[in-house]
Image (cartoon, rainbow, N blue to C red; front, side, top):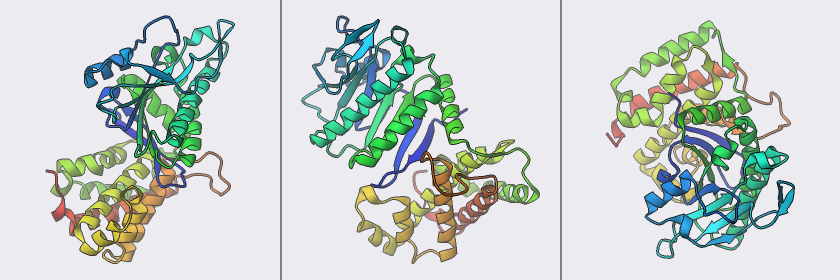
Length: 370
C-alpha cells in the first residue's frame, strides 16, 4: 500500500516549503485554505463531489454561498471567448467562522477547448495568482497551509498526472518564493488508485536512482540496520508512525530507492531532533528564541549542538541534506552531479544506522504518545 503522504521540498527564501500528494478526503484535511473546483457554466448551479463533502463536514453548503471573482482570465470555449467564468473565486462560507477559507476554481470540460494542457495551467495560475492577491490584501494573514483537489475532477481524469504535477510544481515554486505566509501546498487525491498514479508521476519527475543489485557493503549495513529496528523501542506506534514504518518499507524493497531512503532518513532526523530538543533544557531555551514558524530542522540541530556529540549531529545534518535533495524539486541546477546518485545510498544507510542507534541508546526513554 502506498504511503498516504508523499512530500517534495521546494526552494523558498522564507524557510522550508513543501508540496505534498495526499490520498484522502478534502473535507477532512486540516488546512488554512481549502480549494475545490466546479464547472464553468454560469447557467448551472455549482456542483461537485468535493463541494458536497465540504457541505456535509461544515454544515454549510458552499454551493449556496456568495462568490467573489478574483482572477478570471478570458478563455475561449467552443470557439467563443468567455469572460469572468474560468478561474478562481472566493467563497464566503460563513461570517461566524472566518477560519473556513474556501477558494473555488471554475473549470470547463476539457473536450470543449483546443489545448487542455494550457487550460489546466491557466486555471492553476489563476489560483496561485489569487492566493498572492489575497495575501497582499491581508486576507490570508496567518495562513500557512493550502489543501486542494486535483482541479477539474473528472474533467481532467484523462490528463497525464506527470504533466499536471510538472505544472503544479513550477507554479508552486514561483509562488512559494514570493509569499511570506503560505508554506505548504497539499494536493489531495480521493481515489486510492489515482493517488498511486500521482505518486508514481511525482517520483518519475524527481528521477530517483534505484539500486537493482546493491553491493556487499550496502547489503551488510542494510542487514545490520534491519536488526536494529527489531528492537522493541522501534515497535511502538508513535515511532512506527514517525519514521520506522516507512524506513522498514524502504529497506525491504527489492530495489533500494535513494528517494525512499532519503525521505525516511530525513523523518528519522526530524524525530531525533524533536526528541533531543524536548529532552535537553539548554536546547529548549535556544529553540524558544526562534520564531515557531522558523524552527526548521536546521534550527533544531543548531539548538542541540552543545548537547549531542558533534559527530552524531554531523550524521543528522547528512540525513537533512540528503533527505532534502532526495525529494527536493529545484528545476535546473548549476552544480555537478545535478542530483543524488546510487553512490549516496551507502552514506544514507550509515547515517540512518548511527542516528537510530543514538536515539535508542540515549533518547528512547523520553518518547511520548503510546
